[in-house]
Length: 412
Ligand SMILES: Cc1ncc(COP(=O)(O)O)c(C=O)c1O
Image 1: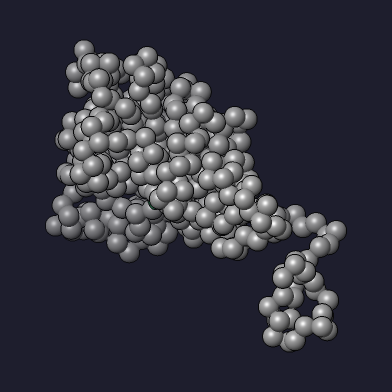
Image 2: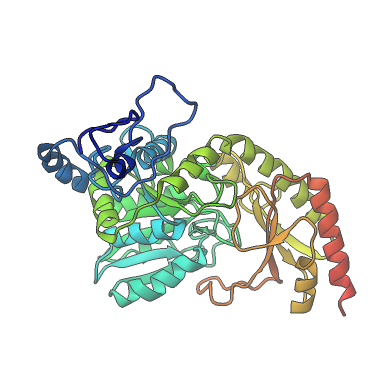
C-alpha cells in the first residue's frame, strides 16, 4: 500500500478502498491548530528509512519515531513546547501518562541499587509512597530532610544539606512550595551544594509552572511537572512531563522507552489547548486566591493561611525574590475542628467540590492529614484544609466558605 488518496481507486475492490481511502489529505488549508495525530502505527516509505529512523528513535533524536510510543506530530509538538517554556534551547522534554509517572520515571532513570537520595519532608504523598516502597525495595536508601534546612525557621539552624550528603548520594529531591504546608525551600543554595558534591537535583514544579518560576535558573538538573494541573486547566486529562538539558536526555529517554511511558494524541492535544490560556488563567487564579486568602485571615476559626503570596507569610520575601506569581492552591490551618466539624465545613458547599486534584478551572476543598506524610517535621498545628481557588467570582467563594464556617459552628 503505497498510495493514499481521497479519490476512488476503481482498480481496487470496495473492501480495499475502505481500508485505503482518506488516509492522507494534502491541502493548502491551514487551520489555527495543529491537526491531532491519533496513532499507534507509524508508516515509513522504505525499509531503508525504517533502518535509519529505528536507532534514531531509540536514541531520542529530535522527532525520530517508528512507533507512536516514541512520538507523533502531536506529542512532539507538545514536547517541544514544554522544553521551550521550561528551559529554552538545549533542553528536552518527555511526556508521561501522569505527573506521578513523570517523577517515578525520572527517578528510575538515575537511581540504582546502593544509591542514596535526599528527599524533602514536604514531598507530595504518592512520591513518598514510591520512595518508601519500590525505591527501598530496589535497595535505594532515602533520607528525608527538613524542608526549611538552611532557612530561618529550620528545626536545627546548624544543619546544612552538605552534612546529609553521603558518598553514595545520587539525587537531591525538592518541592517548593511543599505539598500541603507550602513552605518554600532555599533551592539555589541546595542546588549549589549538591552540584559541588556531584549530586543531581530534581524538583516537582506542580505549583508554579514555567510562568511562575524558573527552576533551571535556580540550578536544578531535572524538572518534573504534572500537566494534569494548570497546563491542562480543565480537569479532564492526566499527564506529566520531565525536562532536562540535552546532556541528561539520553538517560531520561532510555528510561521512558524501557518503561513504555507514552501518551495518546487526544490527551496531548488537550494539553496543547489548555496551554494557550495558561497565562490568563493563572493571573485570575492568583487574584481570586489572594482575595479569598486575605478574607480567611480575618476569620476567627483560622489560625493561619499557608500561602507564600501573602505579605505576612513566613517565606514571603523569598517568594518575591524567586517567583513571578502564585497559583490558586493554598492551605488553611484551623484553630480547632473535630472530624465532624471538618466534614461540615466541606460538605454541601455550593461552589467548592470535594476533590484531591487541583489546577483546573474550578474550586475545590479537601481536609489534609499529614500523620503518615511527615517524618522530620511532624505537623503540630491545627487541622489543615487545602483549598484550590478556581475562576469563579471570589465573592461567591467567600460566601460559600462563610456558610461552611456557620455549618462547622453548628456542629457540637
Ligand atoms: C505536588 C504534586 N506533584 C505531583 C502530582 C501528581 O500529578 P498527577 O495527578 O498528574 O499524577 C500532584 C497531584 O496532585 C501534586 O499535587
